[in-house]
Length: 102
Length: 488
Image (cartoon, rainbow over all chains, first blue to last red; front, side, top):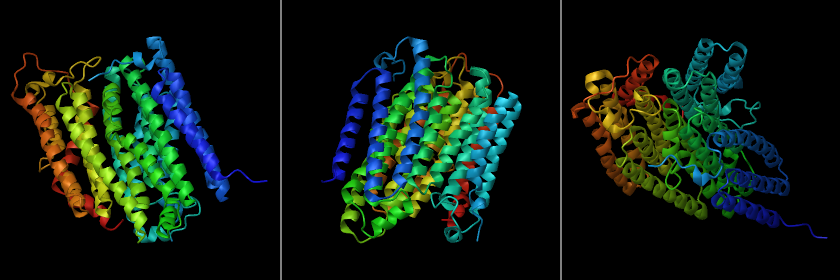
């Protein structure tokens, strides 16, 4: 039986990352944009783990834990900002949040 | 042999100090204690970094680094940047107290947040590992999202915070993907090992090129370089004025240090590998293009602004373009020039923002350039200080801005980027128009009701220190350069 080659994991991670990028660029709901950003971070975690396990080096796997912690901190702050804005404007549609213009 | 704890003193002091300030705030709720402790912590950071500067880099390289497992870089450039960040934090604290009292209410968290952002910046400057680099960038950015939306009942501030948050974490994704690919290419996260692997040709060049490209995208976003600069004016405009000064000087300097760290270890490896040389030259040419576009676009957009805060925000985009020249040069001299310009830029921009914040009146009044007309009759000292900062930003000789640009231009020319220097000269000539224009408005335009906003208290200290810094670096740039000679 043959093991799955490394490239397959990397391609999957690349596809997930691209989906995340497209989500950020096309969706207009702040919460969905936020979910797409989380998808981007997690797809990177996949490639980190892949490299780490195929090279037999633990550093990449340790990095994944740091990334998870950072993503959690980021989501705490991000949801707080979105919540504060929703209280003020009753919407989370990024197209309707456009006071600042030059 | 030096004890590692002595070398790590700046990092330990600021990290423990910032948490201590947060605890103190919870325990006492006393504004005086928290404010003065924050100042003490930042002073401690500056002094301990100055102390580590005395050790020669060769000695530090031999020191035992078992505690940090070689993930942290000590002394030299990082100590110089520690001092710059400590200075930035101090100037911001002095200016922000009065600003908070006048415009919102004095909340102690502001001080602990500024300290935490400084921790992130110090970590970036000290990083010798991509993990540390990423953690530093994220710590700084997350704190900046909060500081931007600090006035949480103002729509402008919240909108700026949301924009900054979405685009900032989007860029972090790119930065992280770049790090993962560089790790996959070279098999290590320690930057000095990465440069060794590249030197011995033991790496995957496709992953390395893509990884470098993605990292450059992420970091250029944090620096607010063209084409990723659109968020910058909105964020600097929406956030509290005293904090905007902090975001666009210390924050920008920290992102540039991250670029310096990457460029030093990944872009300028000495090897005869033709593929690598071709790749690194391409990367530098792309950076040069980004730098040229950033300064031209930043200055041209600043020309059209009516609002002083937005004008300064766009001009800060242009200044990021100038500083990128030092990274394009990718030589020791270029990195010195980056550090020098970051220091000068800190003083002039924080000073200018402190004055704007002082003049700002209740919900963003008094912010148009026309409001500044005839400022000299009511606030002669303020007008003179603002004129100094504007002249320095434009790069007129007696002030520090001139030497900052001079060193950057020299570094760029020496590494063969004459065309970039010529574009930079054209860009600074364009920038004269709006900098000098503000001075003309303050001194020679008539205004029936010139701004009169009472006396300054703490802001005076920020403005005075900034003036001293700008003038000292302008007449004695060799003193600052002397710091490098025996450390790098």
